[in-house]
Amino acid sequence: MRKNPDRINFQSSQLVQLLEKIDQANSEVDYPEKLFNHPRIKQLYLNIVRLDSEISLRRAHDQDLLNLQEEINKNIQELKSIPQFSGFLNKQRKLARHWKKFNSLIMGE
Image (cartoon, rainbow, N blue to C red):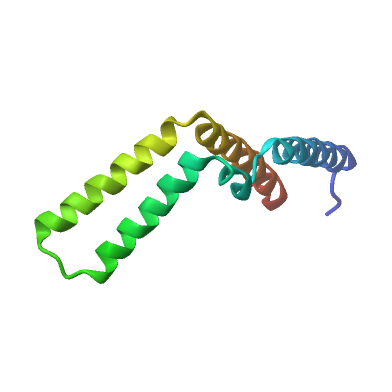
């Protein structure tokens, strides 16, 4: 059984277009290390890591663990409210969508 050359050309051009979109989206993404130049983002991240470590290392009472988890959630919400961080997340989502389309096309889904 022979493959339709028109179908192959169509898929090839779609792949090229998706790769161009991926390249463009990738160039728009600020990498995590750039985010740490923002002092509040760095502080919130370190707080979250510290609090998570406390939860992991402690055999604390339930209320203590709930308080730690609540503090982590507050830090996460504040992180999401910082424009540089929310912009980073949006750009990462856009890039992931392009990769998903690319992978679907490659896998023939």
